[in-house]
Length: 177
Image 1 (cartoon, helix red, strand yellow):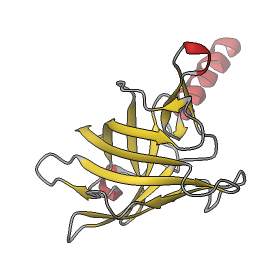
Image 2 (cartoon, one colour):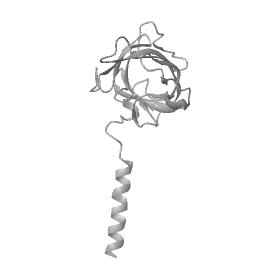
Image 3 (tube, helix red, strand yellow):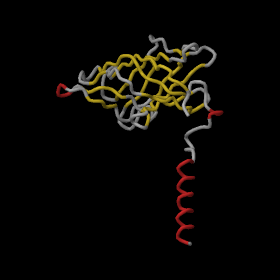
Image 4 (cartoon, helix red, strand yellow):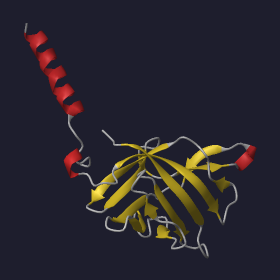
């Protein structure tokens, strides 16, 4: 009888731990208005390595509230902040990403504008990557669709000019659980 009780207690403890929310996942009531699930469409150019480019795909991302007017862009496929791109090295396109490069987007709720982007891993990150908003982009939220247009650069220490340019639309797919 003791073994059954111990086994049942162990299963209950494991189940409770599996259901526990992450401290990084705010309750739905504390999420900001941009928090949600998105698909990314657009273009990307790597100005220093033509083997890297945009993959038109169905990869999904989540904007996760990181502040009252900021969200981190998390790749659902990677499981952490980052943007999936293509590598055509060897004639075959493979999915990849830039290490230590992920976005935090800042918004102005009054104007529906994206006011800045920064690298989630630091400005610059430990490998010298940083993010900067391109002011020539739309850089705004469409309040009717909740889609977000943003144009930004990835800069990298040691590379003159901008390493990569992204001009993307985050297509709103719905609220996240």
